[in-house]
Image (cartoon, rainbow, N blue to C red):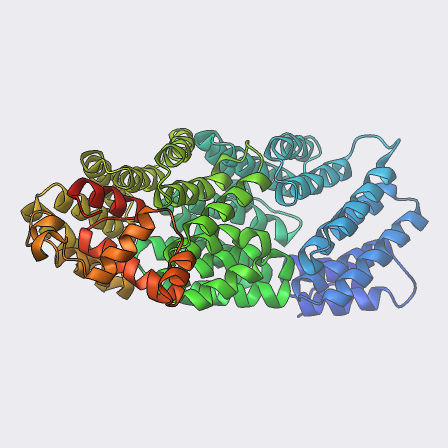
Amino acid sequence: MTTGTTDPLAAGWAALAAADWETARDSFVAALVDGESGAALEGLGWSAWWLADEALTFDARERAFRAYRAEGDRGAAARVAAWLAIDHREFRSEASVGRGWLRRARAELDGLPDSADHGWVTLLEADFVLNEDTDVVTAERASLEAAAAGRRFGVPDLEAIGLAQAGIATVHQGRVAEGMDRLDEASVIAASEDLHLPVSAGWALCCLITACERVGDFARAAEWCGTLRRFAERWGGRQILGTCRAAYGRVLAVNGDWTAADAELTAAVGDLVASRPGMAAGGLVRLGEHRARQDRPDDARALFERAGPAGVVGLGELALAAGDARAAADAAERSLRALPEAVVLARLPAEELLARARAALGEPEAAAAALARAEAAVAALDTPYLHGRVRRLAAEVAAGAGDMEAARQAAEDAVDRFATGSAPYEEALARLELGRALVALGRADHARPELETARVGFARLGAERDVAAVDAALGETGSRSGTDAAGGSGGLSPRELEVLRLVAGGLSDAEIAERLVVSPHTVHRHVANIRAKLRQPSRAAAVAHAARAGLL
């Protein structure tokens, strides 16, 4: 590329601005022929960063830190040290080493007058407390300080990232409208102003898209994804595109385009694992959730395990689907213990899992308590998609307690909310819950259209496991209640009645398997058949229904 200048240092920075990473790298190397220069080494570090050259990124930035100190530019040395902190977290998952570099950065600033470098160090400290400590309150405050420094010193990069990071921290606390306003402002700055670092625009836009995905504001996410893609096509930055592709992949999945979602999520995880393994956990979890919906539990489990602590809730969901409600409850509580109370958004999936697990264990009061916490979180977040999720959860908890009228009403609310939020899979799940509740209430004629609509939705997506669940429910719509069939046995075989009585006695699948001298898998299959025949969403609901019907 021709830059129009013979100064290799200026040529390097011009190539960086033009997203010509190879030319930038070669120009900075040429600038270093006559000796070490902090500016040339810092530029070399950025070109290597975009090229995902880990070794050169660390080497160049560490040398830049030393060169700036030798030149007496302690502010620039502090700025480079702070970026090295992020490098250790993103490239190598070395949070402790990163914290050490942040302390060095802060020490370099000691006694210096306020400057943009103070803002950069504050911003990157905020990134650490947000992503490593999940301290959203501190992250919001520090990010706003960084944004203010950007305005004071005329650094739009700093202002844009500071506002974006403050916005996502605010959203996590449940103040969605305020947080989204900050994110929109940050994205406008990132998309329209002349920023010094290409990473600034990507960072700001990724914060917005991720926040939209988390709260279910999918229309806004789609709008900004187009802007981000135009930037990404020019940058070729796999780590930036990977992070946002993971969020966008989930947007596509919720909106019902599972084929495109699969492609986006698979590519995102591949990019992140290859270029920024320290940033890959979120993509692994999203792909794992998608694999679970595709009824590929082994693949989902492997992805959740690779994600580390971020995958605990996903593993709990798999355990619940396999009939191990105790393990599911343990996973939910483990996740909640690790998350501060202030991170309302991050705690929601664990509270949902805990409510379902407690309902399946026959603990209606504990299930209701977890549901109440989820409802409180969603009341603050206030988006139709999240309201739909918590109303479907309320239907499951009510059904587990045997209150099928409350389950019916909650499921109807969920169907309405998901229809508004354009979430066809969740809408089909809600219709399945509604159909089950109507059957239990003796309203089979009303249940059939709901179940048939759910079946169409699942079939269109390729959710074969869920199609089978609908078919089981449809097969029971010919009679008013389970006790009307098979001579008062509820349609259960003698072995299923035996298993049901042991479940009612509080035995786990493993304990029942030992008692009956069969495998736990066989017991799990019996329990699934019992739930389908009695048209109940959980073990506890099946026991409660059987007790009322005199089957025990």
